[in-house]
Image (cartoon, rainbow, N blue to C red; front, side, top):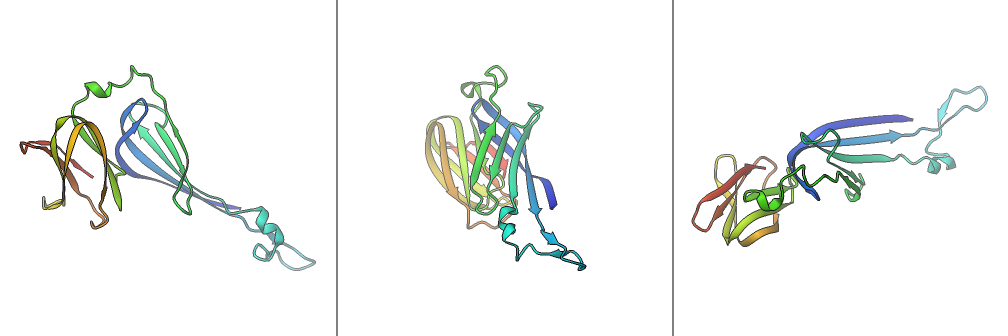
Length: 190
């Protein structure tokens, strides 16, 4: 059996789980296992019989894909997400339940905006927090400051919006939130 493991820090951003909001680094861990059946018949050399052996079905080649989220606020991972490598569906999610005293309550936090996943390819989910009732404009810019997407929303408090960004090329973009008076509340790289 051969095992190939690869671990990369592939993203960073905000993670919202029950118990708090964390600045995190996401670690992507892939594991590929290859099982080979060999047989020696008589005086011949060892031969690979994996493809022709009826026993090869007993030893599937399990691959795994796990995302682990780390934060400076805790020694152990904040969350662990196990994904099916073939179809990218989520198989299991584990997260750290925190004491309410460790993190400030959302009501005491300033108005803010988070984007998930980061980086995103097709769709991105924007989480708006603690915004006074009013009209807001969400804009996505390239690194030269050229606006590429603008959307208007009426928001009161917290809201989640999913946005299709498939028309954008892979790369780094800025997203910005302005209130109805034109004041920029936040600009973040995503």
